[in-house]
Image (cartoon, rainbow over all chains, first blue to last red; front, side, top):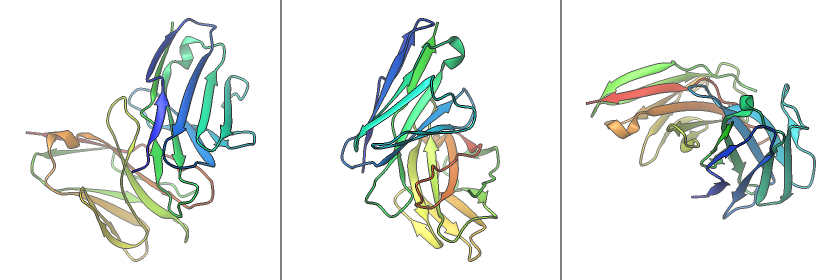
Length: 117
Length: 110
C-alpha cells in the first residue's frame, strides 16, 4: 500500500527554537496533505490543510505564523513550529490522499513527538 | 461535514468477535465511511472502507445499513494486539480533511 514517511519521529528542542517536520508521500502524488496534532489520550485535531503550490488552509485557532506549512512539491509537505514553547509539545501527524484515487482513504505518517523544554 | 458518534471504550477477551458501531446521521450522498486503527505514539492505520452494504477484507468486515446512518466494524477473533483506538470517519473526495471524532478505545485481555 501507499506509504507516507514522516521525519523526525522524535525531537527535543529548547524553548524559542524552531523545528521542521517533513512529510513525504513515497509512491504516490498528493496534491493535498493534512497536518494533525494529538495530545495524550485525545483524538487527532486537524491543524491545517496543505495544498501543493498554494497557501495552506488553517483551522480556526491555529496560528499560521507559528505553524508554517510549505507544500512545494506533490510529494513533500513541511510543518515548521516557530519559536516553540512547552505548550507546543505534542504528537504531530501528517496524512495524505492519493491525488488520483477516487476514494477517501488517507495514508498517515508515523508521527513526530515534539518535546519543548 | 458529517459528525460521528462512537462508544468511548469497549472491552473484550481474546478470541471473541468485536463489533464497534458508529453513528453518522447526517452522512451525505457522496460520503464514504472509513475506519482507522491507532496504536499509542503511531499514526492511524487504514482498516477498511465502504459506501454501502457489506465490505470484507483480510482483517475486518464493515456493515452499512441501507440508510447509511450508521456502520459497524466487525473484528473477528480479536487478539491482544488488537488493543488500540478505532476511529470511524465519514467524508467525500472534496478536498476537505476527514475529521476525527473521539474514537473507541478497545482493550483486549486474555
